Image 1: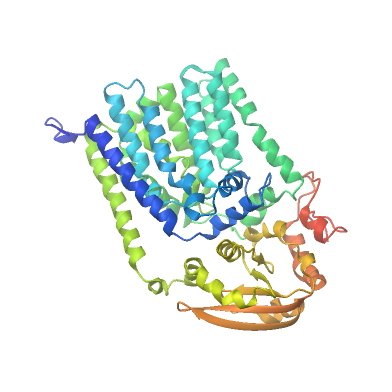
Image 2: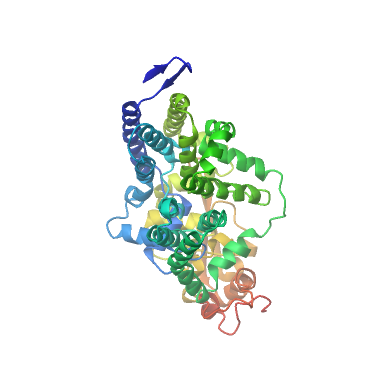
Length: 523
């Protein structure tokens, strides 16, 4: 570092920034590999794992990309650290790509800006600890590199880069529908001072990305429009319109993911941001980083915005910040990011050392026990494994236990919109007259939920690490009764596909109700 008397600040030179970056890279990779091996599988991860067990062109609630990735990874190993490898190395990949992109000519201050931007991306809060492989993992990869290709294309309207951006945007779309926000940022860029070449580039991009929605539409037409029913209709039941609590929560989430320092500084860099807007490539970067966040801000007035929804766009806000911040402010920013990351490490270390019972007061403590102590819980079920089909009453406990047992647990009962992928995997008509064990985290309602569907029902309970679990032993499953009591309401509720959506097949109705259509208003 060298002192700058005029500004009374410290400027970090290129060599120091490079050394700090590689120290941080080694430290974060070490932490992340340890977390990937030590943290038990979560419900969402186990859910997507089972997409990889039976890969398809689509799955119930999201497009298929993460299932394809996990299917490929499973060819080598089912070890959790290995399945999480794409997300473990993601901050390293994104930060090195950030350096390469910002480096520009590689001379003078461009090198400093490149290392500074790479360090910010590497030490962004979520990049310190998040090692969970979900639909957001491939989404971030495809979105990030699509955006880089698009920004490069804007330099000289190179159609090859527009095409590359489109292909990668298609990969992002097959990861998660939020990729359309990136496409909206591209559209706004093209609409600002439009030109023939720019419009042609956007057309090339759209055509290159078109394979993704085509695949998704084709699969949905033959699968009850499952993705559309979940994302557009079923998951939003109970939303009551405007909610004054969710916008402040979104602001806090954004401030955390970007860090409060970055948010505060960006509000004071209006002149620098205005200068960036006048540069074509910088304007593209601004739109990619800020437009999706602005759209989420609008949506936050009616729904809760998950932190993971923002991950694809955080790197570009940090890249904008790295280019706009004066050199004399970088040293303080590096210290803040390093300190913030160290605080995360300290919290992780404390949590890892505390006994499980520390969290006994939490409302979802039973779920924590089920996740962390799954092998012990499965031991309690071992005496029943030869005589019973295993199930739970929800998708998260079912898939979590399934991964740990390497034996699939069905979802018994109505469950929720998030549990419907089990409708693809489990054929209850094939279980007629069999015995089914259903594990509960809360006391079951035997008379209402189980007695009508079995010849005989027995309930047992046990305690594990300070919380209670219940086992429903259902003997002699009555499929016809279950069909009318559980599956028929599910058909009317979750599979009420609007008439205007063309449908070639529906696995649910064809399996259980060949005489009844999965259509809105059908009884």
